[in-house]
Length: 405
Image 1 (tube, one colour):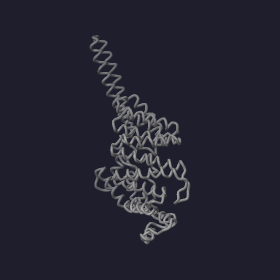
Image 2 (cartoon, helix red, strand yellow):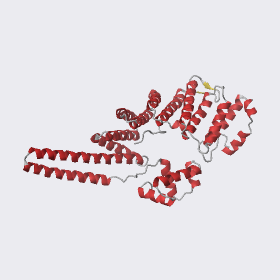
Image 3 (cartoon, one colour):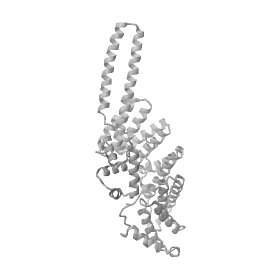
Image 4 (tube, one colour):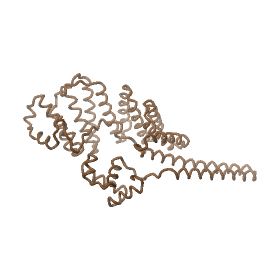
C-alpha cells in the first residue's frame, strides 16, 4: 500500500508554467527573454533603482518559471539571481517564490536537506509577510488567506520531506500545523486529504491504531464536505487497514461502500477502484480460509460428540454449505476485473496511450509539456516495467494487461 500521497495535498507548492511555448507577461518567449537578461551587467543590476529591480525581478521570474520543466539548473540559476538582487530590500513575496522553487528543484534531484532548507526559508518569509501590510515589490496588500494558503502548503511539503526520510514524528508536527490552518478556515477537503495522508504514513510505519484514527478523521471531514471521491478513498484506506488486521467482515463492509462511491468517478479514479476490488478479492479469499477452518473445527467437535449418524448428517450438511460458499466465492472472484500487476502512474499511462496512437517523441513532449529527453526516459522505464524491448511489444503487452484499450 502506498505510504503517502506526496503531492496531492500541497499542489500549490508546485506551481509550474508550461514548458513548451511558454510566454511571459509581455509576450516574449524564453530565448528572447534570456537575450534581454544577458544584456544586464552586474554593474547595471547593482546600481538599478527599485523600479528597475522590479522589472528585472519579473523577467527573471518568467525565466525561472519557463525553465522549470525544461532545464531545472537554469530555473535554479534565475531563482538565485532574484534572491541576490533583492537581498535586504524587504520584498518578502519576491523572496518567497524563488525560495519555494529552489525547494522544488532540490526535491526533484532528491537533495532533501537542501529542499527542506529552502522550504523552511520560504516558510519564515510567510511569517514576515504577515507582519507587513504592503508588499513593496507589487504594491499589493497581503491577505490572511493568501498567507495561510502559502504557509499550509509549505508545512505540508516539509512534512512530506520528513516522511520520505522516515522521520515520522517530525513529519507529523508539520502536518498538524497545516491541519490547524485548514480547520481555522474551514477547508474541509484539505482536512480530509491531510488526514488520509497521515493515515497512510502511520500505516507505513506500522502504527495501525494511529492510522485508523486518521482514516476516520479523513472520512468525517469528507462527509462534512460532501466529497464522494474522498469518502471513497477514506473508506478504501479503512478497508485495507481492517484487511491487514484480519477483520474481514468490517473490511468488506468498508470496501463495498467505497466501491459504491468510486462508481460515481469510474472514469477518473479507475486505479483506486481497481485497488478496492483487489482488496475485496483478498477479503473473500481470507473469509474462505476462515470458513474452512470453522468447518474443520466443527467436524472435529462433532466427531468427539460420538453420535456417528448425527455426525455423518452434520458433516454432509456442512460439506454442502462449504461447496456452495466455495462456488459463490469462486464465481465472485471470477467476475471481478483482472487487475494489472504492473503499477503505473497517470503520466506513464498517458505515454502508453500516445504510443498506441503512433505519436512520436516530439508530439508526446509537446502534449505533456515535457522535454523529449524526459519522454525517452519514461519510455525506457516502461520497457523495463513491462520487460519488453520495443515500443510495439510494449503497446501489445499494455493492451494485453488491460492498461490501455
